[in-house]
Amino acid sequence: MKYCFGVDIGGTTVKLGLFEETGEILDKWEIKTHTEEEGKAILPDIAQTILAKLEEKQIHKEDVLGAGVGVPAPVTEDGIVNGSANLGWNYKEVKKEMEELTGLRAEINNDANVAALGEMWKGGGAGQKNMIMVTLGTGVGGGVIIAGRVVTGAHGAGGEIGHICVNYDETEVCGCGKRGCLEQYTSATGIVRLAKRKLENETRDTMLVRDTVTAKDVFDAVKAGDLVAAEVAEEFGIYLGRALANLAAVTDPAVFVIGGGVSKAGEVLIPYIEKPYMESALFANKEVKFTLATLGNDAGICGAAKLVL
Amino acid sequence: MKYCFGVDIGGTTVKLGLFEETGEILDKWEIKTHTEEEGKAILPDIAQTILAKLEEKQIHKEDVLGAGVGVPAPVTEDGIVNGSANLGWNYKEVKKEMEELTGLRAEINNDANVAALGEMWKGGGAGQKNMIMVTLGTGVGGGVIIAGRVVTGAHGAGGEIGHICVNYDETEVCGCGKRGCLEQYTSATGIVRLAKRKLENETRDTMLVRDTVTAKDVFDAVKAGDLVAAEVAEEFGIYLGRALANLAAVTDPAVFVIGGGVSKAGEVLIPYIEKPYMESALFANKEVKFTLATLGNDAGICGAAKLVL
Image (cartoon, rainbow over all chains, first blue to last red):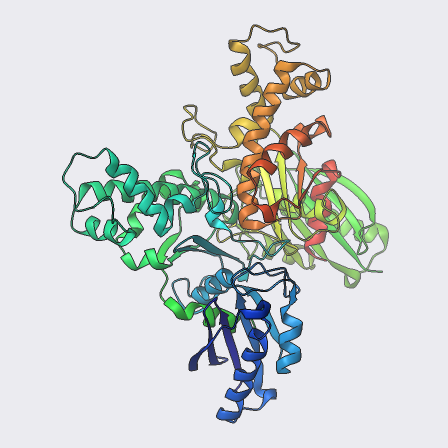
């Protein structure tokens, strides 16, 4: 039996998993992310807990295929990070350091890309090789997988689905400094923006309350038959569905996997995205499935483990 | 010395090249494409001329790495075409038939993707592994190369850059049945449309003549300092530059290669595309080059040859 580790580095905790090469999770645990002093302890802490786990489980290094690591930053093909605000890192040769610290092979990739790989391996995209994952959370992230490989790009910046421009007339500025990014309409905060705009001049009865509305409220109200909420969901779906249709023209996926906090609304989301997608997609791209992410917080460690398999 | 063949199947002629594995072209020639009777003679004709060339050059089959073939249709990862209007083909197992007919390894891909691969190997994208080629001809085609591999997609329909929707308010219908496709504004015919719309209500002096204007006329007039033509070029560039910025957010290329008939206008094109691109691109995607395709009609045979190297 061979083993591998999946490591998902976040700004608060590092999630770790010990896997059999078949994909079975043998153990999961977390350690704190020490971001102080430019995050210099993060990789040594990870190496230490991995080596301790090998000791605990009486596993020999030669039976370990490696450790995959997801990082909240762009990562080059050589496993280098040029800076991560969340971790305090500046330039860091993550692959090289991890390999030196653990004596194990290491593979590094961006956390959103890694989560997509996890969903392709064991989640919503299982069995597929061409997949686009969209993560609808505080922001909108994504991971594009083509022929089974994560799209990293020339600068490690592939998969930034949230910053596709979908509205050149937008006046408010996105966190990235541009205007009209997909994230401004389809993240949890984007959905709140759409709802607030809608509620400004709304005279019909609705369950939604302008001052306190959340993305969850919107989809809860949709499920309860609220027409105003349904119109907010439609607007959300048009922005997202059209953007995905444009992506599909170029990448031709077999499946879209919808994840992130917003996706906890469940299956109710899918038709709102799928209808405008189908109206806008090329004929050849209509044979595609829309599914929800299924791995939740485990997507990161699963995808990270898959990096070394 | 090892050899390979590059084959570029068009609706009128089949272009062929015999290459050394270093990329040197030893011989180039063409045969007629016999599309009658569902194009049943096309692959046997190609096999015959390849075997005759081996005989002529006294090359043994064991010294041939294979034959790459570009086809004007979507091609699956298994080398299957589900129909090509230009060639008369219905379902055809192109890879399997080619290998049986020639006794050589064969690799098949879509012609636009193959041309992109050619430009990456020996043309405008030489030395890069992450590249987007845009072919501005009668239509707009493209090829996306990520980590050195052509994006084929789940249905062999990757790289259809021309059918990204860039204007949801368009009333005229594109050849694909959708409205507002990039092709409707940036192909040779699209540029003519933009020019004619502009000239309808134009009172300023211009070299452009509404009834006969061509894409070449537009860029010739731009070079001569014609302000009306420059505004048409600006509009063309905004559509194309913005679409490429959205693609870059997801694929993060190192270089865009502009090819096709429209690109014969030369370097004058580039700033019109690059300026709106830079205004719209994510920070991480601004470190990118725009270049012109350099291989012309040889891009197809070069890229096809590269498929087997």
